Length: 235
Length: 235
DNA sequence: TGCAGAAGCTGATATTTATCAGTTTTTAAA
DNA sequence: TTTAAAAACTGATAAATATCAGCTTCTGCA
Image (cartoon, rainbow over all chains, first blue to last red; front, side):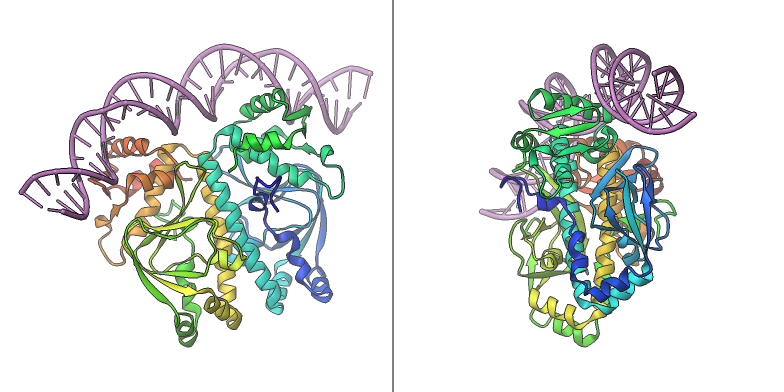
């Protein structure tokens, strides 16, 4: 599933969206039996780096950024998780503290699942364990890819890549592709691409004059995905 | 296990060194029954990004870099694996092509294990599967950490961090700490820290005048680890 | 609807880092 | 032990990006 046959979009997504599908109805029911649902407003923190995990989170609706704050500097966004995805399970599995923080980038509904229930299903379902093993292995691809991009690409390329990836995440099933609107702060965009917020704005303006996108306040509407892919200089 | 109580060295290492310990003697014997051993000279490529995996590799002796080459640009080193570690298993587990390449950075002896044997043990030993799940989850910590460092640290800080991490990898059990000698090319150092090779050399010279290290040809001898940690500016 | 705070945006400047075009030193093979 | 190739190193310059200090426009709440 490559975007326009050029951009390897599968290299940018974890696959936790589908791992719960492998559970039987009964197993799924048991997994979520003791869940507690909570609404998070845009900007609300879900968990913080360094704290001890008590369970995992299932994003029912909304979008969540996973990020690290180095020293007192700006945030680096590691990943943007969408509805249907699990977050916070790494720390449970590795028996460590959270290596990163998570916060809602739009209003989100999120289920908390106690770690005991997660571990219990893991022990009960070898198929689920295998599926998780596969998902975690794929994450290596995604993260290695990010490392290489951040280290080797120029700022305009990184911003273009961030926009392409976000566009997929904001794409709603069935709706007209031309109507995809990114609703994300310049700060978060800067955190994703690893560049200064001021330069994000300057680059967006440049992209605008090149006919790649339109903006309206914080909203970004990608008009020409082919041009954007060209800008990203991928492959 | 933090270095000098400051630098979180555990954030830089995968844990595949110990995952085979969980196997029974019989399971281990079966895993390596059909292995083939091969010697790789410094610089030899073990597998290449994009190729189809046929098995996994166990590093018997030596050191291996895992890296990505973006477009035609320089290599970005994702990880340096030491003797005792497994490599190439992500692609087998995720049923994808290799997301990165691997090459020996010193003469190494490496066992190739057919993927069927690896998968077979995985199905046979739930304990091994759990251990692998834990190891893969820990990798998230390591890679997320790398992303944040590459995106947010200055060149001297990144080089200092690379040297600290390498020092641990070159530390031989039991030998005098003062005698640790890094034998690594400036090119590989540049690939690890994500900076130009010329600047690696300039920074090394700077570190030398500050009394942090000594060099002799390609060899680097870290004289003052405390000063180096200070240079890395960690925490 | 007015208003305050947040976020978006701008231009000027400083800083960092890469690039280029070499020279010198090291390494390993003949 | 010579010697050619590779790697280490140097200085000058260019390019990319961050920082700073401010202005403007949104946004949501009273």
